[in-house]
Length: 73
Image 1: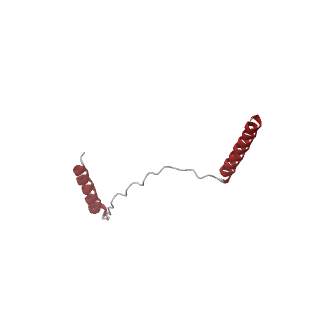
Image 2: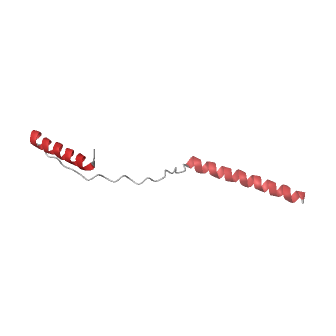
Image 3: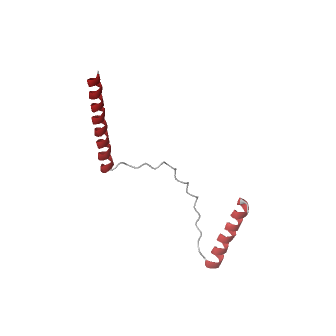
């Protein structure tokens, strides 16, 4: 079925509805699809605290490694 055939069929159905039921047919333009944006998770307080703990542990590890390197030299 082509677009023109579909339009004609819809027009016939709308006209039949008006004739048989005495109703009114209101047509609207199709709404555009919303833009697809990538979903991003916002970090919760627990996520932020976890990140801070990881940074703290990594910093402590780095400090220990630096101290060991200085002691070796």
